[in-house]
Image 1 (cartoon, rainbow, N blue to C red):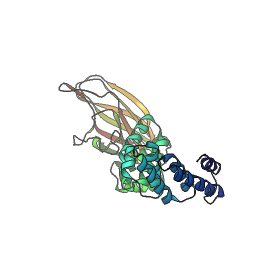
Image 2: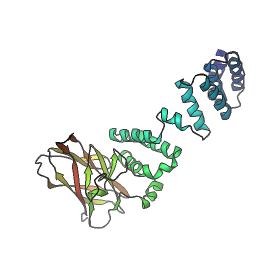
Image 3: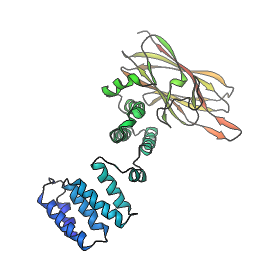
Image 4: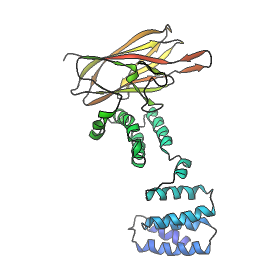
Length: 305
């Protein structure tokens, strides 16, 4: 077994037809025959088969190893990867190792929250490649991640926005957009901000980030007026920004449920930007207090050149 493992290590990076790999397979097959109740030589043999491009043989060997030790995590993980290699993944193993679409969506939201946009985009690419039915669900947040981390969105994703909610046309001199047009970035990527309450207002029922995508034909300066509630119980701590970059932080302290205007001037660059709002200090005490942040609407006003 040691001889076969050593040859396999020497063959790292070699062609699948390398004589070293063939020799390693011979040694490891002998070791597996001599140690029929030990999964270790089977694991090495499976690696050698994968290195030689014999993926079905690798799966068969790992299935033998798994039958010997059903609770061996290393065997299960290698078997999961081998299934993925041949395009017929094992759902049970993927879920066990956190390789399920919902688990990866959750991890991507944590990455968006902490600003790890490059890694998040890699996760989204993995989700779409492995579960193409998730394409529409992750489209909004993939675009937000591009805007926040790189500023440029691939053309094919922009073209896909034609059938996607959460995008407003920023061209023209003035328009009013209801708060419910914002969508969660985290938690709950791509859900409308008013879920589960409904209505035209956007409601943060816990801490997080909501965004609104604005399409722009020509870059220009705009006045953005965001009408938010000075809700009870105070304070309401929020931030506002563009493309993931905070421009303004507010601390609403009156707690009289009046509407407060937060305004700032910003350059909106073609073809697409995200208007972002964060809620920072959610609080809930059952039967007594529930602090939420509420967006009534946003005015998008193009300024004269």
